[in-house]
Image 1 (cartoon, rainbow, N blue to C red):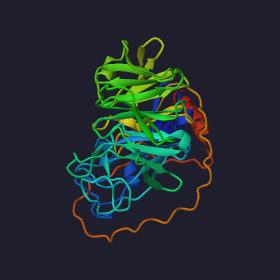
Image 2 (image 1 turned 135 degrees about the horizontal axis):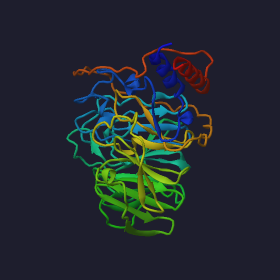
Image 3 (image 1 turned 180 degrees about the vertical axis):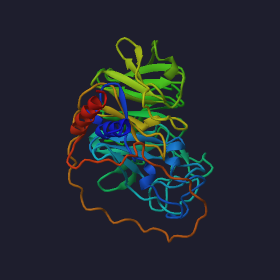
Length: 407
């Protein structure tokens, strides 16, 4: 057996994020989002300048649906792409899903479509998963059209009913670009950073402004051990002590992470297994110890390409795998980074879905122009499979063959 075939077997063995070694990367073969995206002309009036790849590349964010174990993406907007569909990468199956179809022929520069769904937009860091309510959350962004129209409604999506709701609270945090937010399971609120620090209480359907601190192209994560929101980017590291309702910004002096801190729109999330805030913007991930304020660089070997215009919420910790998942491009594979060895906490089994509600009438299609770009392929390419063989047995077999070939 050739060394190339052995390498392919080793790669096939590492198709489970849970089985990855510590401080390592894994690309999921043949996992480009293009495989489930609409084609040009399939949903008239939605293609824009560049098509659905702009859900990622055009300042698009994401949030992790912890109940179902899925990274959920929503984006587009401005002139780039007008489709408002939702995508999800399922960690258990390592497959993409398109959760909804785009509303056809949306009107530019208005936030609500004819069917009551939100128009597409650059979502930045303005997406979150409200775990206790099992709702996907979105606010603000750059709407489809000229990009500067009013976009200040509070939206949630019910995964079971596949339905968007305009929550219409009495006051909102407003619109804006380059926003960021994080959900705190202790306070059961979404904490929002843009023109001030705000919180959104889903149960009360109410926004509260806590201070006037300004943020633009920063990223945030919730340190659930200490009850603090940590914000990183554009030369700043700071926190808010939410546990003690202290909304005065605490600026941190940290060491070892200047290469990451200097950037905007990084990926940032908290790893509770090792008690680290982990950030990534290409190359090495950086792991911040909240106690010592020290960053440590992880491995860049096999890392995902960084993509365009930032990472935002497309870098998320996956409890069931004890690893981070990241999506950086329409034609790129999905990647995982594992900071520490071992399996994580399985996601709770989803409750049975109710019967879907009748869908709203869809306008009659018409024609639209434009062209699509090229496709993608997988990274392994050997096509080898072993019926009934799991990752562990494949890995042992490959290592045995490698040992024999070196004798």
